[in-house]
Length: 147
Image (cartoon, rainbow, N blue to C red):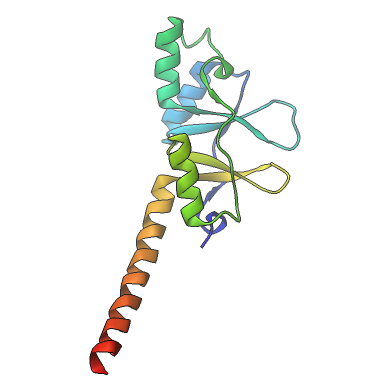
């Protein structure tokens, strides 16, 4: 199984030059924890950052400025981890763990945004794979016990 089977297509996104207050409103109204940040005018829609609710709170506090005075670029996490659709489940989990993040934009071979993958997407798939493995081990043990 690879993340191409698991990601959420058409993630919520925002441009880097948008007011931070507008991005916060999107997060709230769409009930999502992150927005993929894109560069305005770039046709390929390559992710240049990710903005989480935590980024907003920490960025506003750190800068001591009103949300209406800051832009997304002021507080976003630049250079986000991006994952390609053909990446396997285990490799995706390792990549998220290595960067200590819970989510990552999913891109195609050209780097264009396709979707987003989160730990909430990966954990049920991993559980299913472990259940399958446990079933195989149980079946094998049953056959060995009959011989």
